[in-house]
Length: 322
Image 1 (cartoon, rainbow, N blue to C red):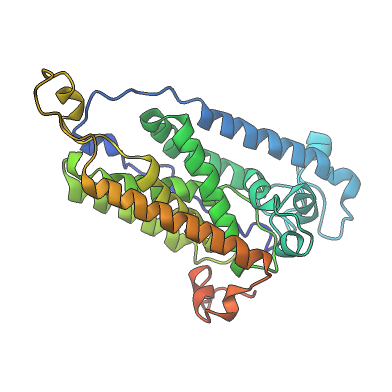
Image 2 (tube, rainbow, N blue to C red; image 1 turned 180 degrees about the horizontal axis):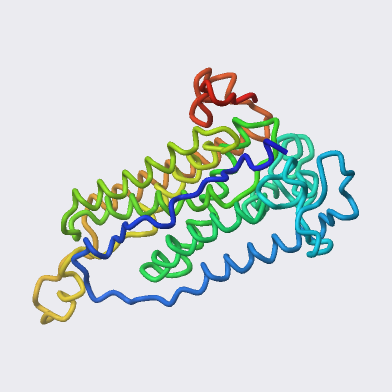
């Protein structure tokens, strides 16, 4: 159970003080009501309750790792802490319900696990950490850009994280929404870059966001945290931000009210369109190549002898194992 939650026990820090609106010059843009992100949170909680119901620790626990925790919950009680210190189900239950496992995806032709794994969580601690991050990061983005764009970023970033994770980590199961969450962080960074001209205090905004991202990626070098899911989700979200999160340049909305013979500003700057095209090409190429390599059964560790250090750096205090 030590390797149960390879897809990220850690989360993007929910208590970060970064708020892009404090640097934004602003135009008369529509402010959306956030409902999709709260629905995602509810869905994750429901899936966790279902996982605990299926797990049924009192019936299935052999007792070799100790007694079930919180027995008053009945069949919703948790596995022994020696097996799962995150207060959750067994690894076999997670695997049964759709956890990411390389052998199942490649040899069992169960590609759907690339998506289902992001809705499963290893325990209450893992669930709370990710849902708090989703609320703090996702609701703000949905209010600014709407549910369609944020939903696409969330789901495709989760898929990107799953693909990269499976290409490097092939001996353990993987669960969690961390890849999708890092995708939202990546999208926040590219949104700042592609809409650079309409922000004030640009350097402060960029530095703040980079520090937040760097800290969270650095946490991924701890054992039992799948930083490949974090990196894959971040890269996918970063590219999607250039594609989906363009803002009109400053003054464009006001210029539409000018007389008919007056010159109207272009909605977007040329560099925004260039970034959109480049990001689109890279995203399509990356996801396609990743899927092809995955279903061919490739192990990228064989082609990159140092890449495993991106997910775990051994020290005198811990070992990384496989």
